[in-house]
Length: 229
Image (cartoon, rainbow, N blue to C red):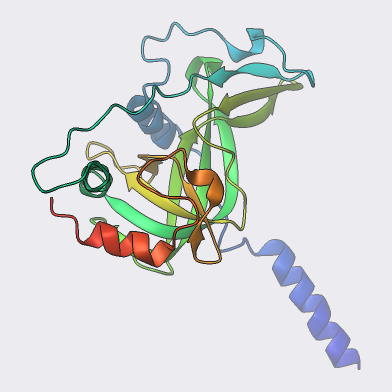
């Protein structure tokens, strides 16, 4: 009995002091600067300090990120539908397309306190396309504009209207790119992360036209794999 209690105590200590393998990497100056350049955050250094922004109803200071303009119309090429063109554009322009489960996230203020970026760690479940060599079972860090931090005792928030906050444990279909001029390992979403539940595209994802809400993930994958770049 004593040995069993000792083993349980040691297991608890180890779980407390050993970082989770799914923990999101901490921000550093190099990766933050790379993300700011790629996302064009405060490029001229003239954006206002978020501490001076208006308040949300709950008292937090911040703002909404302006939504993307509506998708432009596509004129089908000969023998190719508009849907196929959009799928090809998503497929050919991405460095990594994968089904992945969201893990922990960490947010940070950008330079000049102009905005907030959030890095989320994902575990790759299935790969549709990978120019980066990522495989199922590996991790990938994804950076998006938006998030919430507390700085100088003030709650600060940036809400990205282009997509809902990522939920830890939820699986998403990700279309990602990574800058070629950066040593950072971060990827960036080329489109809105699409929730996938029980093998089907979430019904709330219809706003991203290439994917039909309720469709099977495997069917979408096969459609992408037949695209020619």
